[in-house]
Picture 1 (cartoon, one colour):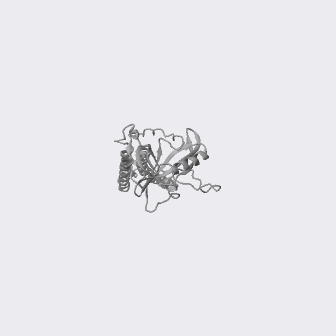
Picture 2 (cartoon, one colour):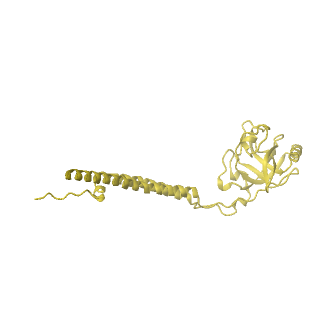
Picture 3 (cartoon, one colour):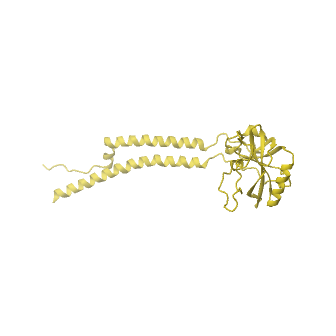
Length: 264
């Protein structure tokens, strides 16, 4: 009686072994974690309560919008606010590289003391001529100290190293940079955003500050992250399949080698 014919294992037989069933369960757990992370990202990708259209054009008191030392939330960038205070003498400074409708020029800025020990940086107006900016500073220093400002709240632009040929020049509108030039700053609270006045004074031109574009209710970066997590979840299953198939191919190869050795 001849011995029964032997055949190599099938891929299905290999996948149903305890080792690979256990590996599959582990992959299911990993994929489940990735799926949860993807869902978490998607929940944050869609703004379910976006700010209403035109909300930045509703004039609000400064203190109702942001507090000193706090970063300005993105939906409030460009918000029109009103505040009153007192100009601090000798703190009117020029910021370069300011564009008004595509024309490069200068902003004249000032420190407006809006509470006893609280100030906000204000961009007062624009000019294409540095001498006009200097004349405006002289006029502001000799003019009324009290002011009521209506303008848009804009986030700090950050700081850069000043050019070597002019260490005092500032090319970014940054309250942090202006603070280093201001007077009477001991224990002073400063707003992180600055205020771009909609109406210029001292012979300066109004700063071009159109209403900000309406924000999309979809955060596409979070959507991208959610897709990435879905890909990772799929890769967990592919990895299990690839490892099981590699093991099966090795067994088939060993079976074929053994069969060939018996026939020689």
